Length: 98
Image (cartoon, rainbow, N blue to C red; front, side, top):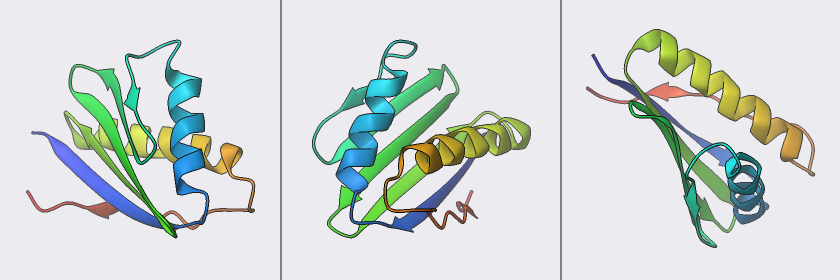
């Protein structure tokens, strides 16, 4: 059963994080991004979507099952943490309604 979750991260560098993350993964996945949004298809059933606002970053992850969802939440969160300039990001995933 497909699973999804999302988080909203307070950060003034949302657009920069999308660009860095998508550029980083572009060698491995067919990412799509512009100044305010990003899409990363990890595989046919797993993807991340990002949307920037001036003071926050919205991120959602979709996966085929709960185990894959947890794994990719961790992957996305750890990459965002490494790319953030402004210190540690507060990332708290919320399960989306089915």
